[in-house]
Length: 193
Image (tube, rainbow, N blue to C red; front, side, top):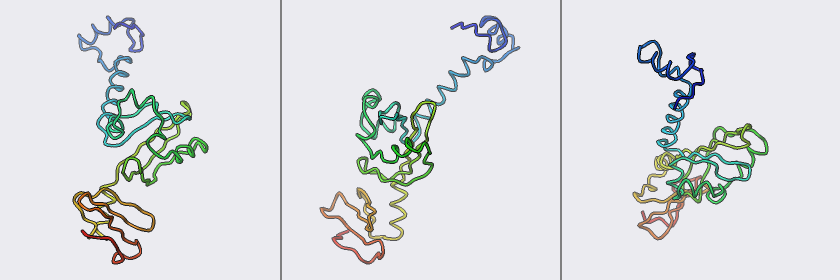
């Protein structure tokens, strides 16, 4: 497309193309080209990040989400944009950020509906009256930390860990839950691991 915007210093896109061909100018001097390249790079970042990323409006409607979020929620982008965040996770922290307009830069949370423990970041975006949410899955790291303290927890097919004064691990191979009191790793019940 020939926009002839002049941002590069040439009167027309044709003059700029000639200058590039003659090695008197570079493609990067073209503002529309640079913006499109930056946009495509940010799309790559969104597509390959292992984190769940959302942009949410005041009504908790999902305005954007990345591929990882779509995979974990098991919905397409189009379906996600018709849904609300509270359909998938607790939104208390998001509501607090909207109310206080203060971002949360680091908080460990348990996303029960998604079966994961995450590091949560919620960034308030005043220009858009929205928030950017990033959930970094730390389930494996948390489990590894507890396995160091409670070796009996090691179970190849374990499902999750609860943290309410107790540590619980459910194994797909077992019908019961192995539960420990956090104050004493020797105080456990229902364990057949």
